[in-house]
Length: 374
View: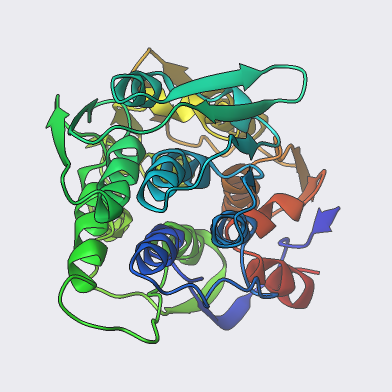
């Protein structure tokens, strides 16, 4: 498909989509606190949110086949939550998690080890790419290494809502610590008060893409639905954009891995040299995002380098002269958005295999592509 960005001056307003991070947590925490009627999938839901809703509906209806689609958050949250829910409600049976895309191949080792100490084993079926829970969860102290994934910690924290005699012991330096803080904030919200309705604040991950697009595009974009008081870690994009324009810049991405592709593109067109640190986890997302962003930037003539935990991006040298750039989506919503950013910065049209992965996190932007970029 072709996305038209060449010789265009843009002037439009767009709201950031609902925060997936908040939405997942709100849905699960509400469900575990007895709210079981907010689970209908709507046309505006991203695929990841739809996956969490469908899993919670399955638990509510005592159907123990939970389809996580490609959502890593859904799988990592729902494994301990489902085990705890079955224990708390005296439900017997084998829980089966269905997966799509690369989700089955993404690691669960530390979560698996933690749950095994409490009587639950994860059983993988390579032929069907499903993961099953075997055993009955035992209460106690759940010890988990927070340096591997904040999602493991958050999943156990939410599971403990229905296991009041248990606690979590986080060892190591937590990665993406803001997400753990976000989980605690949602849990605390429901401890002492009823909340019949809930509103989900805007997503700073999607907002980061929009703010980078605003930085790079010819024209102006007004970005709304972003809470400046949010505890979402990706709010750091504002500090990053303020720091851009330097000859050399080093940025720690331990707590903000999701927005590194956007930051890398913006760096190429603003700084002479930018070093992004603590980026190793980008390799085990929906795609290998280190390899993918390097390939995308290379197509624009931009030099990059990598080590195990760093990505270095050098400034654009003005060498791209074509009217169109051809980039791949890698079946990854973040990489579709980074491709759009590259084309916007070059002022060229973009040929990409598909924009369908945007449905995973920002389905509304596909309408903007049709209305503004076609």
